[in-house]
Amino acid sequence: MSCRGCAAITFSVVLLSLLLLSFTLIDLNVPDAEPSRSTGYPTWHPVLDHFDQQSYDTSIFFLMISLILSGYYSLQWVSHRDLPKKFITYIYQENGSRIPAIWFNKTIAYYISFTSVSGVALFFFDSGKLWSTFGTLHNVWEVCILLLLAQGGKITSSFFYAFVAFYIMFVNVLNIVLPWPFDAMWFKAQGLCSDYALFIVFVRIYFATREYVKEQSSAQLPLTNEDDISPADEEPSVSPKVIRHPNQILLLIFASFTHILGNDLPSISPVDGRL
Image (cartoon, rainbow, N blue to C red):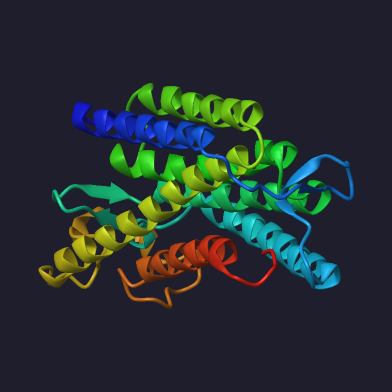
């Protein structure tokens, strides 16, 4: 990551911190937080009228089962070591660089798996300070995806680990020291930053990859050199592709957009409810 990119991230974090601190100068009429039914600790929401606890629990269970199964099969798929070269996808960025999607796919698999952990914790602890230590596992893997793409699809320097460690410490320390409702506002705001960033990056990568593919005449895309395919690769060891490259990236765009809606709508909806 360039110095300009680091400066932009630092400036954004400082600006967001100053914005949060400014709320302490305003006398807000803040409702009391509802205690968690499991721990009794205050949660990040007030008592909700006309709230259907059974429907909420059912949706959380559906989330948990879906994420656990998706994480398991994702990890199984990315663990294939005998994947033929012609099945390896490359992502083409706007600057012309080509990123093998191997580590990118692994990071997404880890992202899904750790999100399932935060989903299980959400059911038992409800949203709040205690749950935020698990919720950070979901957000930090979004940051890892962004950093991985910024570094060319693989970890190229110790900055990756340093930034991830700083992010985890910074987010959790503020979650601990900020009182209600500023802790909830901080966690929501920083999470939305990575959500929107992922959507923007996926859209840009899709258009950059599509433009590159249009200029190629090889039928072996995403490979551009048929000599890279050995005779052993002619016998595929995985199921045939059902989505033409690079349309599989549209799934990431759809997923990230749906994730943004799931985070935004409960916050701005005038009807009491949780997701």
